[in-house]
Image (cartoon, helix red, strand yellow):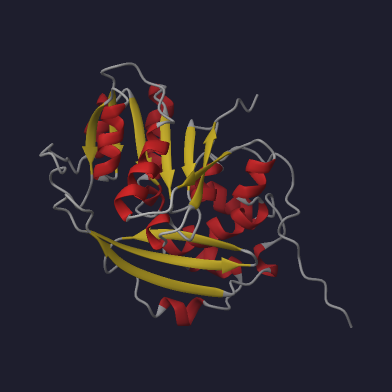
Length: 289
């Protein structure tokens, strides 16, 4: 007897724009973005912990990621230290995708959702269709690759000289790239107190969201519960929102034109895990009308 394997790439066209992250998960569980997640299996779940200190800097970035493999795609999400244990790999690998989406901790749910949406519409397919711009990051040192990546992200900002740019999730090369475009960064991060140049970093994103002329937010906001707040406030104020996403790059894409105005999507393997040239994908929102 021949078993038919569900094809997650056969997604319905133009699903409704989600209002919030949980609403997107519910729509996926309802089959609005492709086949039922209960028919799909997370082949692999894995956990990565790494540290980076760029030359010339005094900050050691410590990052943890959970990743989900579904078919030909990976979904990824960063999380705070201690939030998940490596045992998640043993308990979640081989689980039905709907179980991860319904019962997993928020970072695992986000990674599973990212894998589903990336398999439904790979970023490379979006680029081939003219919906995204493929930007090749050059081979080289971490510093060379970080500067190229963050210049590509800052290139999505359409701002006037002197505009304030809320930066939620601070990476020093991105601070420099925003300044190079004439912006004045308002940095916000839970784990840093100053930038490489001594700029104060607040941990109160509400201060930043009320003052900024534009906002740049990391995809990690999807996993720490702040994304919905950022999205709603930028919508209410009519402020451009650029998301730079390794975490949840396909998840953030679902909000393009519904609060997110531009996206730098970097699917796994991320740039810091390779010295070879890799690709990120830049999206700009188009009207859903």
